[in-house]
Structures are given as structure tokens and as C-alpha cells.
Length: 133
Image (cartoon, rainbow, N blue to C red; front, side, top):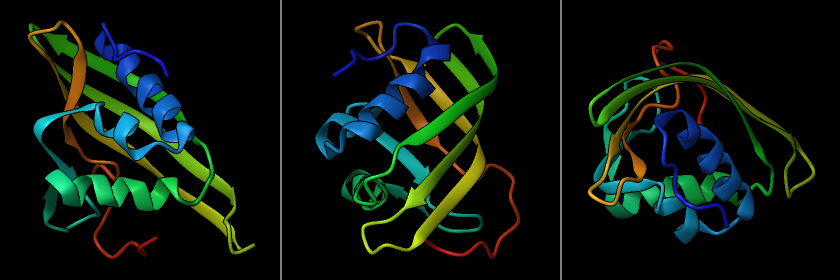
């Protein structure tokens, strides 16, 4: 399992590797305590067990996530990351899967020097009404 990021620009790659591991507990470590996930455009943010359950549902597809960071703006212990991502392939039910977006995320450096998501907004500024996965 890759260690948590020591630089903000590495958070997406750590997320992708841990996502691909299929281990929800390993993925949960990429988030700081109290982090929130914007589950979809216009949706209420998820935190704690609900955040991790949402990620586990996507992990259960058994498909990797590809991440392509566009920009990382960091100051002090905060960073704004803009990241294109896609999950694509054949799901466990044999049906095609394609979920993608441009995330606008906030990461924070912890007391241990590791960077974790504080706000995970996977669909960025996409309009409301996207289909659920």
C-alpha cells in the first residue's frame, strides 16, 4: 500500500492506488477526520461513515480510477487540486461502466506532514442532475 502523500500534488495518485487496492479502510486513510464528500452536483455533503460507504460502492465495481491532475495551488498547509478522473470498464454485472468528472478538492497537511483530503468534490462544477452510479 503506498504511504500517504508528503506533497499535495501526490494526493490524487495515492487516492488512485488505494482506490484500486479494493480496500475501503486503506482508501479512508486518504481523508482527514471530519472530511466531506460532495456525492454529486447539488447533493448534500457526506461525512464519516457515509463518505466511506460512497467510496466503497465505487470500489466494489472492481475497476481502477485514472487520475490526471490539472493544477495544484498550495499555500502553507492547504491545497486546491483540480483533477480529471475516470472509472471505465466492465462492472461485476457485465455491464459497461463509465463515470468521470473534474474534481475540485481541498487537501490539508496534517501534523504528521501527510496530505489528506478535507473536501472531496469529484464532480467539481458540473451541473446538477447527473445520473447516479
